Image (cartoon, rainbow, N blue to C red; front, side, top):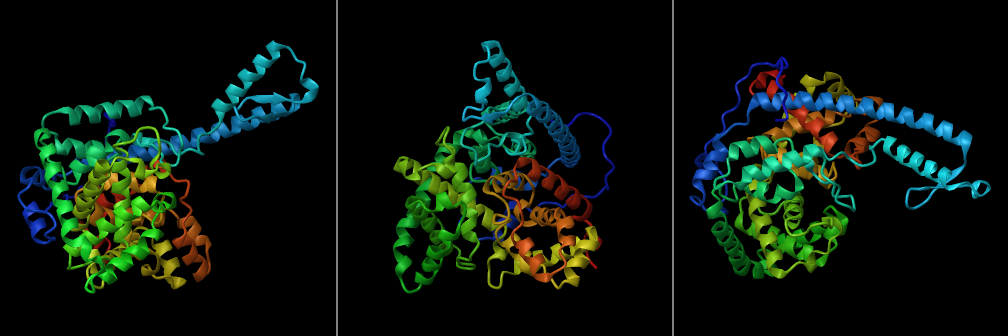
Length: 479
């Protein structure tokens, strides 16, 4: 267990919001999902709440661990500086490609024992280096920007074993899966975990193969029925907009592959045709990417997705990835479809709620933005429309979605608190900017390129604390 026994942090006792039943949810959403497929499992997902105490204690623990880690990095940096000063007094050296040290020409004839001492010194120096350049692999998620799959730490291996044990039974306990997944899902089991958490796969192992075959067949029946109409007068504007938007997606290496473009165009066009209430809206295109990347990982081992030639996969595998991505994206969008209907009322409402929430949790930041006439819609519209995908690296989005799919109403409700925590995270930089233009440029280009799981874990912990304090007390954040 991640939580050690001990005194619980003081919390405000609140009553968690009850999740609506799946039938109520279904009646408000589209026809893209056939009712009755997996009623028992989907009802179980909708009916169960995350253990509040577990997550609250985890949130505090994450923040404490983060503080300790920062202190440790500071100590390591000081230790490194001392070593460098001692070293410069003894020898002049340059770093080679294999990370060993080559001495200057004047010391080229030293004995082998001296060489060994130098090598040992090099190893000690490398071990004392702070690891800030590579984002820590909190909760076992591999960094998609690294070229080599790192070895699992003892904690990561332990978590992976817990997931494997949970998924190995004849019926997966979805409540336990949500609890375990909240703090991150190991890369190796993320594809199956996401399919279960989204409601795409049933909890019963024996029913999964037949469900996958049926849903994949159903998707390609849609393709056969609708895709040829993309150039018809009624649909050509939709298809043209999709075709324009896909090259704007991230990551660049992935989107430039013709096979990927072809798959994304089909997924988005079929979704738009099947959901006429909203149709295709810019921003929906980004929501395919995390599912696609995660499901590709199910079929490749060492290579990273961003540098992987997707067209090298067998056609049957590509079809499976495409259909699975379509259905899981559909399930996500079912819960936030009012974000994409005419005038996007869902986003307008969420941005207003974000403004009210920030005015309560950090009045100084809110007042600073107001004084410089920065409107929340000018920067936060994209946060809601693209679920922060344009603000953080893809690896961070995938980690965020582990938690979103573990939270009741994660994409539609918990995301609001993540955005509030995300804004307040930059309070120092925001308060230093005294100009409207500079403020807006900063908020639209936040420096998160080097973010990893550590930063996301702290962000989620802060977001959960906000949700715990405000979710069932709306008067707390309404003026």
